[in-house]
Image (cartoon, rainbow, N blue to C red; front, side, top):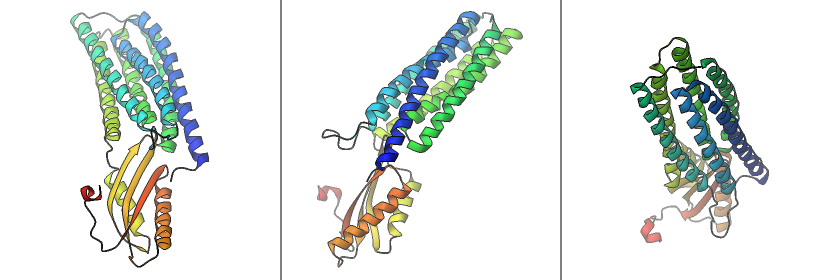
Length: 305
Protein backbone atom coordinates (compact mmCIF):
# COMPACT_ATOMS: atom_id res chain seq x y z
CA UNK A 1 0.00 0.00 0.00
CA UNK A 2 1.06 3.61 -0.48
CA UNK A 3 -0.15 7.02 0.59
CA UNK A 4 -3.62 7.95 -0.63
CA UNK A 5 -3.62 9.94 -3.86
CA UNK A 6 -4.58 13.27 -2.21
CA UNK A 7 -1.86 13.11 0.45
CA UNK A 8 0.75 11.99 -2.07
CA UNK A 9 -0.14 14.90 -4.37
CA UNK A 10 0.04 17.39 -1.47
CA UNK A 11 3.45 16.05 -0.41
CA UNK A 12 4.75 16.24 -3.97
CA UNK A 13 3.63 19.88 -4.23
CA UNK A 14 5.30 20.74 -0.91
CA UNK A 15 8.57 19.11 -1.97
CA UNK A 16 8.62 20.97 -5.28
CA UNK A 17 7.89 24.29 -3.58
CA UNK A 18 10.72 23.67 -1.12
CA UNK A 19 13.20 23.11 -3.97
CA UNK A 20 12.04 26.26 -5.80
CA UNK A 21 12.30 28.31 -2.60
CA UNK A 22 15.83 27.03 -1.90
CA UNK A 23 17.07 27.89 -5.40
CA UNK A 24 15.56 31.40 -5.25
CA UNK A 25 17.04 32.13 -1.81
CA UNK A 26 20.46 30.85 -2.88
CA UNK A 27 20.50 33.06 -5.98
CA UNK A 28 19.62 36.19 -3.99
CA UNK A 29 22.24 35.40 -1.32
CA UNK A 30 24.97 34.80 -3.91
CA UNK A 31 24.37 38.23 -5.45
CA UNK A 32 24.33 39.97 -2.06
CA UNK A 33 27.41 38.17 -0.72
CA UNK A 34 29.39 38.71 -3.92
CA UNK A 35 28.85 42.45 -3.50
CA UNK A 36 29.83 42.28 0.17
CA UNK A 37 33.00 40.31 -0.67
CA UNK A 38 33.94 42.95 -3.25
CA UNK A 39 33.74 45.68 -0.61
CA UNK A 40 35.24 43.83 2.39
CA UNK A 41 37.75 41.31 1.01
CA UNK A 42 36.94 39.08 4.01
CA UNK A 43 37.91 35.38 3.96
CA UNK A 44 34.93 34.64 6.20
CA UNK A 45 32.70 36.38 3.64
CA UNK A 46 34.40 34.38 0.87
CA UNK A 47 33.60 31.23 2.80
CA UNK A 48 29.93 32.02 3.15
CA UNK A 49 29.74 33.18 -0.50
CA UNK A 50 31.21 29.87 -1.70
CA UNK A 51 28.83 28.03 0.56
CA UNK A 52 25.88 29.93 -0.96
CA UNK A 53 27.16 29.14 -4.47
CA UNK A 54 27.29 25.47 -3.56
CA UNK A 55 23.91 25.74 -1.87
CA UNK A 56 22.50 27.06 -5.12
CA UNK A 57 24.12 24.27 -7.14
CA UNK A 58 22.98 21.64 -4.65
CA UNK A 59 19.46 23.07 -4.49
CA UNK A 60 19.26 23.08 -8.29
CA UNK A 61 20.42 19.45 -8.27
CA UNK A 62 17.76 18.76 -5.64
CA UNK A 63 15.10 20.37 -7.79
CA UNK A 64 15.90 18.00 -10.65
CA UNK A 65 16.31 14.98 -8.35
CA UNK A 66 13.08 15.57 -6.45
CA UNK A 67 11.09 15.94 -9.67
CA UNK A 68 12.60 12.66 -10.88
CA UNK A 69 12.07 10.93 -7.52
CA UNK A 70 8.38 11.87 -7.59
CA UNK A 71 7.93 10.20 -10.98
CA UNK A 72 5.57 7.23 -10.47
CA UNK A 73 6.89 3.68 -10.70
CA UNK A 74 7.05 2.31 -14.24
CA UNK A 75 7.83 -0.94 -16.02
CA UNK A 76 11.60 -0.49 -15.61
CA UNK A 77 11.51 0.93 -12.07
CA UNK A 78 8.89 -1.08 -10.17
CA UNK A 79 9.97 0.37 -6.81
CA UNK A 80 9.78 3.96 -8.04
CA UNK A 81 12.56 6.51 -8.49
CA UNK A 82 13.06 7.50 -4.84
CA UNK A 83 16.79 6.80 -4.79
CA UNK A 84 17.33 9.79 -7.04
CA UNK A 85 17.05 11.76 -3.78
CA UNK A 86 19.90 9.80 -2.20
CA UNK A 87 22.06 10.30 -5.29
CA UNK A 88 21.37 14.04 -5.09
CA UNK A 89 22.35 14.04 -1.41
CA UNK A 90 25.59 12.22 -2.17
CA UNK A 91 26.37 14.68 -4.95
CA UNK A 92 25.75 17.57 -2.57
CA UNK A 93 28.21 16.18 -0.05
CA UNK A 94 31.02 16.16 -2.65
CA UNK A 95 30.29 19.78 -3.53
CA UNK A 96 30.33 20.79 0.12
CA UNK A 97 33.58 18.96 0.95
CA UNK A 98 35.24 20.74 -1.97
CA UNK A 99 34.13 24.17 -0.74
CA UNK A 100 35.42 23.44 2.77
CA UNK A 101 38.85 22.58 1.40
CA UNK A 102 39.02 25.78 -0.65
CA UNK A 103 38.05 27.93 2.32
CA UNK A 104 40.79 26.37 4.46
CA UNK A 105 43.33 27.06 1.69
CA UNK A 106 42.30 30.72 1.45
CA UNK A 107 42.29 31.10 5.23
CA UNK A 108 45.86 29.83 5.59
CA UNK A 109 46.94 32.16 2.80
CA UNK A 110 45.43 35.06 4.75
CA UNK A 111 47.11 33.89 7.98
CA UNK A 112 50.48 33.93 6.23
CA UNK A 113 49.73 37.34 4.68
CA UNK A 114 47.27 39.26 6.89
CA UNK A 115 45.09 41.85 5.18
CA UNK A 116 42.83 44.46 6.81
CA UNK A 117 39.08 44.25 6.38
CA UNK A 118 37.38 47.28 4.84
CA UNK A 119 33.73 48.38 4.69
CA UNK A 120 32.79 45.95 7.47
CA UNK A 121 29.38 47.56 7.90
CA UNK A 122 28.38 46.53 4.35
CA UNK A 123 29.27 42.94 5.13
CA UNK A 124 27.37 42.98 8.42
CA UNK A 125 24.20 44.36 6.80
CA UNK A 126 24.32 41.76 4.02
CA UNK A 127 24.93 38.96 6.52
CA UNK A 128 21.97 40.01 8.68
CA UNK A 129 19.75 39.94 5.58
CA UNK A 130 21.13 36.48 4.76
CA UNK A 131 20.33 35.26 8.28
CA UNK A 132 16.71 36.47 8.00
CA UNK A 133 16.18 34.84 4.58
CA UNK A 134 17.82 31.59 5.67
CA UNK A 135 15.69 31.40 8.82
CA UNK A 136 12.54 31.66 6.71
CA UNK A 137 13.74 29.00 4.28
CA UNK A 138 14.82 26.57 7.03
CA UNK A 139 11.45 26.94 8.78
CA UNK A 140 9.64 26.06 5.55
CA UNK A 141 12.00 23.14 4.84
CA UNK A 142 11.48 21.70 8.33
CA UNK A 143 7.72 21.84 7.76
CA UNK A 144 8.10 20.01 4.45
CA UNK A 145 10.40 17.35 5.95
CA UNK A 146 7.98 16.76 8.85
CA UNK A 147 5.22 16.11 6.30
CA UNK A 148 7.09 14.20 3.60
CA UNK A 149 10.23 12.68 5.26
CA UNK A 150 12.16 13.70 2.14
CA UNK A 151 15.89 12.92 2.34
CA UNK A 152 16.76 15.45 -0.36
CA UNK A 153 14.91 18.30 1.38
CA UNK A 154 16.43 17.25 4.71
CA UNK A 155 19.91 17.28 3.15
CA UNK A 156 19.25 20.76 1.77
CA UNK A 157 17.98 21.89 5.17
CA UNK A 158 21.07 20.57 6.99
CA UNK A 159 23.50 22.84 5.22
CA UNK A 160 21.12 25.82 5.27
CA UNK A 161 20.92 25.35 9.06
CA UNK A 162 24.71 25.32 9.03
CA UNK A 163 24.55 28.59 7.10
CA UNK A 164 22.92 30.26 10.09
CA UNK A 165 25.95 29.47 12.25
CA UNK A 166 28.30 30.49 9.46
CA UNK A 167 26.57 33.84 8.99
CA UNK A 168 26.79 34.54 12.72
CA UNK A 169 30.49 33.69 12.52
CA UNK A 170 30.90 36.11 9.63
CA UNK A 171 29.30 38.91 11.67
CA UNK A 172 31.70 38.17 14.53
CA UNK A 173 34.69 38.09 12.15
CA UNK A 174 33.73 41.39 10.50
CA UNK A 175 33.22 43.11 13.85
CA UNK A 176 36.46 41.84 15.41
CA UNK A 177 38.58 42.32 12.30
CA UNK A 178 37.02 45.44 10.78
CA UNK A 179 36.26 47.46 13.91
CA UNK A 180 38.77 46.18 16.47
CA UNK A 181 41.64 45.50 14.08
CA UNK A 182 42.04 41.84 15.02
CA UNK A 183 42.97 40.71 11.51
CA UNK A 184 43.75 37.14 12.54
CA UNK A 185 40.09 36.51 13.50
CA UNK A 186 38.88 36.62 9.89
CA UNK A 187 40.88 33.59 8.63
CA UNK A 188 40.30 31.75 11.92
CA UNK A 189 36.56 32.15 11.58
CA UNK A 190 36.93 31.08 7.94
CA UNK A 191 38.50 27.80 9.09
CA UNK A 192 35.72 27.28 11.65
CA UNK A 193 33.15 27.82 8.90
CA UNK A 194 34.96 25.24 6.74
CA UNK A 195 34.70 22.76 9.62
CA UNK A 196 30.95 23.33 9.89
CA UNK A 197 30.57 22.83 6.15
CA UNK A 198 32.55 19.57 6.24
CA UNK A 199 30.47 18.28 9.18
CA UNK A 200 27.26 18.98 7.27
CA UNK A 201 28.68 17.18 4.22
CA UNK A 202 29.52 14.11 6.34
CA UNK A 203 25.93 13.96 7.67
CA UNK A 204 24.46 14.25 4.19
CA UNK A 205 26.80 11.60 2.77
CA UNK A 206 26.04 9.20 5.63
CA UNK A 207 22.25 9.52 5.18
CA UNK A 208 22.51 9.10 1.41
CA UNK A 209 24.84 6.10 1.69
CA UNK A 210 22.49 4.38 4.16
CA UNK A 211 19.59 4.74 1.73
CA UNK A 212 21.56 3.60 -1.31
CA UNK A 213 22.78 0.54 0.60
CA UNK A 214 19.23 -0.34 1.73
CA UNK A 215 20.02 0.09 5.42
CA UNK A 216 17.32 -1.25 7.74
CA UNK A 217 15.01 1.10 9.60
CA UNK A 218 16.08 1.89 13.17
CA UNK A 219 15.76 -0.83 15.79
CA UNK A 220 13.00 1.14 17.51
CA UNK A 221 11.01 1.30 14.28
CA UNK A 222 11.51 -2.42 13.65
CA UNK A 223 10.28 -3.19 17.18
CA UNK A 224 7.20 -1.02 16.58
CA UNK A 225 6.45 -3.02 13.41
CA UNK A 226 6.76 -6.30 15.32
CA UNK A 227 4.57 -5.01 18.15
CA UNK A 228 1.87 -3.85 15.73
CA UNK A 229 1.83 -7.19 13.91
CA UNK A 230 1.76 -9.26 17.11
CA UNK A 231 -1.01 -7.10 18.62
CA UNK A 232 -3.52 -8.72 16.24
CA UNK A 233 -5.30 -11.52 18.17
CA UNK A 234 -5.01 -14.00 15.28
CA UNK A 235 -1.27 -13.52 14.69
CA UNK A 236 0.93 -16.14 16.35
CA UNK A 237 4.35 -14.79 15.36
CA UNK A 238 6.32 -13.05 12.60
CA UNK A 239 9.75 -13.72 11.13
CA UNK A 240 12.11 -12.55 8.37
CA UNK A 241 11.31 -8.85 8.83
CA UNK A 242 13.17 -6.75 6.24
CA UNK A 243 12.94 -2.99 5.77
CA UNK A 244 14.52 -0.27 3.66
CA UNK A 245 13.85 3.26 2.42
CA UNK A 246 13.84 4.83 -1.03
CA UNK A 247 13.22 8.56 -1.17
CA UNK A 248 10.04 9.31 0.78
CA UNK A 249 8.93 5.66 0.75
CA UNK A 250 9.68 2.91 3.26
CA UNK A 251 9.42 -0.73 2.21
CA UNK A 252 8.44 -3.26 4.88
CA UNK A 253 8.11 -6.99 4.35
CA UNK A 254 7.83 -9.99 6.66
CA UNK A 255 6.30 -13.45 7.10
CA UNK A 256 3.18 -13.67 9.25
CA UNK A 257 2.69 -16.92 11.17
CA UNK A 258 -1.00 -17.91 11.44
CA UNK A 259 -3.10 -20.87 12.56
CA UNK A 260 -2.54 -23.55 9.88
CA UNK A 261 -6.21 -24.58 10.04
CA UNK A 262 -7.77 -21.27 8.96
CA UNK A 263 -9.01 -20.63 5.44
CA UNK A 264 -7.05 -18.70 2.85
CA UNK A 265 -9.77 -16.04 2.90
CA UNK A 266 -9.35 -15.49 6.65
CA UNK A 267 -5.55 -15.44 6.33
CA UNK A 268 -5.90 -12.76 3.67
CA UNK A 269 -8.23 -10.70 5.88
CA UNK A 270 -5.83 -10.92 8.83
CA UNK A 271 -2.93 -9.81 6.64
CA UNK A 272 -4.92 -6.85 5.35
CA UNK A 273 -5.76 -5.78 8.91
CA UNK A 274 -2.12 -6.04 10.02
CA UNK A 275 -1.03 -4.15 6.91
CA UNK A 276 -3.53 -1.38 7.65
CA UNK A 277 -2.25 -0.96 11.22
CA UNK A 278 1.34 -0.67 10.03
CA UNK A 279 0.35 1.79 7.31
CA UNK A 280 -1.34 4.02 9.89
CA UNK A 281 1.81 4.00 12.02
CA UNK A 282 4.18 4.35 9.04
CA UNK A 283 2.45 6.54 6.43
CA UNK A 284 4.20 6.52 3.09
CA UNK A 285 5.29 2.89 3.41
CA UNK A 286 4.66 -0.12 1.20
CA UNK A 287 3.98 -3.31 3.15
CA UNK A 288 4.37 -6.82 1.74
CA UNK A 289 3.21 -9.73 3.93
CA UNK A 290 3.63 -13.45 3.27
CA UNK A 291 1.38 -15.79 5.27
CA UNK A 292 2.95 -18.91 6.81
CA UNK A 293 1.28 -21.70 8.82
CA UNK A 294 2.60 -21.53 12.40
CA UNK A 295 4.95 -24.34 13.37
CA UNK A 296 6.40 -24.73 9.87
CA UNK A 297 10.18 -24.51 9.94
CA UNK A 298 11.04 -21.40 7.86
CA UNK A 299 13.32 -22.01 4.88
CA UNK A 300 16.61 -20.18 4.58
CA UNK A 301 16.76 -17.44 1.98
CA UNK A 302 18.90 -19.59 -0.30
CA UNK A 303 16.38 -22.42 -0.06
CA UNK A 304 13.55 -20.06 -0.89
CA UNK A 305 15.39 -18.83 -3.96
